[in-house]
Image 1 (tube, rainbow, N blue to C red):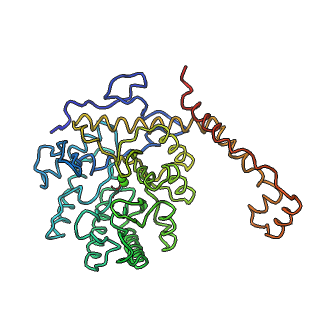
Image 2 (cartoon, rainbow, N blue to C red):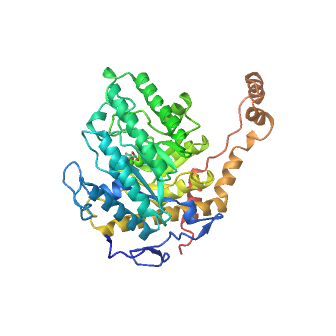
Image 3 (cartoon, rainbow, N blue to C red):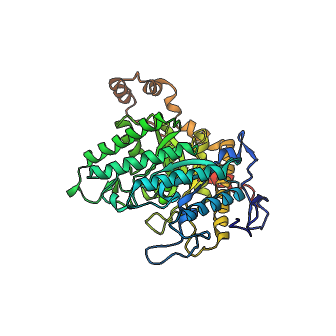
Length: 441
Ligand code: XLS
Ligand code: CA
Ligand code: CA
């Protein structure tokens, strides 16, 4: 059964096309810096938003019909979502998908064994339906934030019983990730944080989270999971204080508990901006620590202070992000559209238009980031800017042989340093604009 009968296969038609159901920039086979666009941009569909989110918000009911002809909450509906998802991905040429356990099947509140049996059944069904295609899992995760049992946290809970359920969900989600050939496994600490220190032992909670992650690594490796574990940082929402505030915080945590060899970052653009950073900042911090794994591709809304998960349309942001990704040599994961249609964009066609927007935005970002690198002016300026560390005392600082005494003696000789030189922010911004709009008359 086809769900999107009126939607054709989405093809590349080029920037001059006015066809809404065509790519203007994403040309899967176009080669940029030695790789095809498809290789640079392993796009993924987020099961929860695309097949689940129906437009419900704090103030109103759903506006978008995601029943796909079946009764929500049934296995029939779970299977209809698989069918719809595969048809959707095929029409867009998307090869990956991401999921939480409870996006795949309805959870049985009374008995986790029933939920687990449903996960076995749906993963068999996904494998059967994707056989002969190149559609695969990018990453899986356990939803350890929605169920009321996690109200005080999952790995950070005060209850050892709840902790067992968190562990059981992680174990099962890892089984299914491996079964579906996933590249990665995500920990997003939705409830791993606190509201008030008056009731919270932060050290105790963080140690328990680390222990859950250690057990996950041990188990994952024992069942043949060779991919990366990811932490997905987010500073707030739902908790007031979330432990994985940003990449720097999460990387410090992983190093402290000896988890840094198995974990990388899954950087979400909207979470970066909630933390008061740019998307590219979070990518840079991850990459320079050897921990850039995967990306949740979306954007926030600067007018609103929460996690709006909008489809990315900001070409500047995508360009700066792709500059970081290209400099880092690419992702081991992919670009998961953790993005949802706006509530009034409530047709099936809107689902496709949103992905076309997101894929074209990242394609434009890739094209322009490669042009910035090939242009060379930014890299050249940066190299020059630090040139005083190439020789003399600067070089001794870099190789670790300088002492505080000799630097102080040099300062005494100099009496005052020469002006360190202009940072040239405005010039560099104009270079970026020049590259971005070099086709304009
Ligand atoms: C929520 C997060 C979540 C993770 C996976 O803000 O983005 O969806 O990506 O649990
Ligand atoms: Ca996310
Ligand atoms: Ca988000």
